[in-house]
Image 1 (cartoon, rainbow, N blue to C red):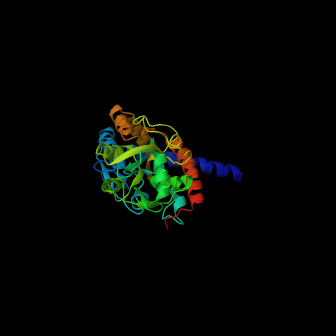
Image 2 (cartoon, rainbow, N blue to C red; image 1 turned 120 degrees about the vertical axis):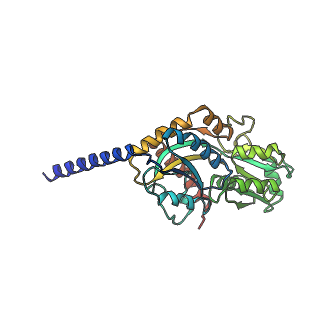
Image 3 (cartoon, helix red, strand yellow; image 1 turned 180 degrees about the horizontal axis):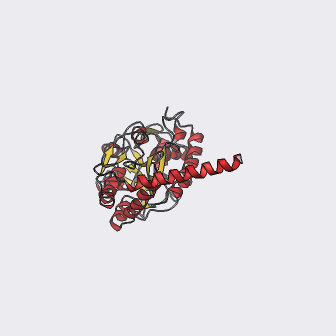
Length: 323
């Protein structure tokens, strides 16, 4: 009898939640209230370009004003916390690379419990861009040059602990070279540092690396993935360049705050997937070296676990900590 009452109570609670979720979704978006897409990187970088393009399409689809807010700093923690603390009404979204809890002894939020997956927007590896001031044309020559100049070459990254740093650390480990990591606050700052010679190499997005390549500032010598990019089929993979296994890849996700009603998640996912699959949006992603995924929230959760497990094992092996 007690068991039956518990079952009835659970069913009643579930039905009540669904009714509340549907009621909230019917009122979403709230008239006159803008939807914010928080980007935890400075303006001008790849993630900012993505978010602004998507926002321009998502607004008309939802019948609401959609704005992008850049909140860089603290290895994306500042931007993420702005979403974690937001009301779970669908009006505050996060567009970012997956947070990496393995890099910190303690994060101020739980990347799994404090955020709601909405869609894995795109997958895209970084490329290894080398300054034209270095007398090298490929990865093998870069490794040879670094071995002759231990500790004298710097590699930059757009954020401490991101895939840019992890790929640089893996290159150090696999090639047995001594290169120094210099972190920046976003891709735009990294591009300036690479163009001015403050750093001699970096793993960065294809779009920004291409810009520097066209300006004669860098050579793109490899892609950090197990397959060549559609937007740059001439660029060899790290394995083809002579350093197999020395890479991690990832992509950009849309999240909402915790406790976001299922019906609102479903609405946001449906509209975002439609936007991401638009031809011009797809072409924009491809031009930045990304491949549109446009997953379901459930698929996104699996992808997050897989990426976290691989990157976590690498971080533990290399002993990287940011606090």
